Length: 277
Image (cartoon, rainbow, N blue to C red; front, side):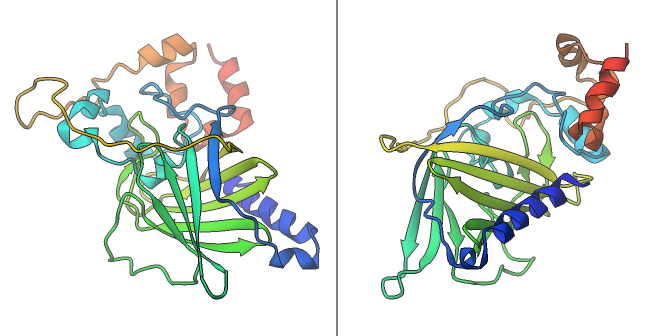
């Protein structure tokens, strides 16, 4: 079964089992949330650490040419992360809501992490813009209730990256997200579909814990010269010149295993790797 289809089926099952009165329930997600780092790391992975990503050949070629020194460029230092990545960022989260003063309905939720821009999630039923409309780092997000689960659809994202090791995501990507709250735990499920760089939907989840003493601070950013280089030089590797064996040797995995694509998402792949020399 496709992982994305399985997650969607699970969400529908949870809603249906709750009974007929469950459909009108609305959970309050506003508050300060601290990231629970118990899942796969969202920090700076090695180049070549592509396990669990359904990458196609075009995505691998771009990832192979990526150089982490590009983060030192003046144009990149204060550039926001793209929406397909920063919702997996390990920093703390603040969620606020906008209420209609008459009906008291939630018109929008706003999610903001440290070092990131503020994401509006519109709850008033407005349609998504034309595919030809401007794309942004945030994208355009709308939400609808599935019982007490909030489903979020995000489109109009700029081209960016899925992980901070060169894995690209295109401006054709869409995100289907689910907020699920259980007491003081918030689970954020993200299903990324990208017809340009992914062969299957990519399913990720992150957990947060409510923190009544947290306050996400302001984060002013100023670009500085970190490395002196000639004007116009962009750090990169030419195709075939990046030594990916540094990663595979340190991890003790066969060199070809990092090119497994979608197969690396499933448990059977681990058994297959163990059987290789």
